[in-house]
Length: 216
Image (cartoon, rainbow, N blue to C red):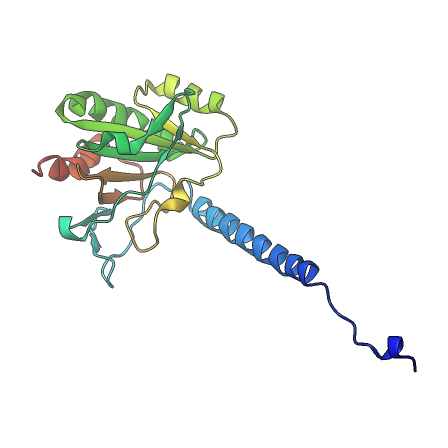
């Protein structure tokens, strides 16, 4: 056998690196997609509760409202981008106000049921240092979202999050949105104070909001 035949084959490091990196990128993309699917699989529920305790720092009452003490609250993740009206919005700009954050879709019947309740409470409290913000998700176009706002007279802004990427920024084990609709109350320091995973009546929305609004 010639020396050339006996010589070991050498692999191309750059080619091997490329083959290794591609599956890693695919797995990461699939993981993110699976997380979105898991969230949207719970979409459009009319009610429900989520347990607290176990180191989570929050407690969910029989009414489906989860709350957490101020010293155990987590910061709201960075939530910014275009609105359904084509403007730019950064929720961090409302630091110093209490923020009511509502996740909704025009295709979701419970979201439609609660929309007028949110607008009514917003009009009542917007001069008391409260800002309402929506996150519209899974609507195929902003036209659908704008039609929803017009139908129900919604005047506060909503971020347009068609694929749910903003919702994935919430950490597991916190008061993160896990259904559509979900509503979070954000305290004046930009921390998540309360959450519910159900459509809200006017009375229940006020019940969530009032304790945080009363904090000094």
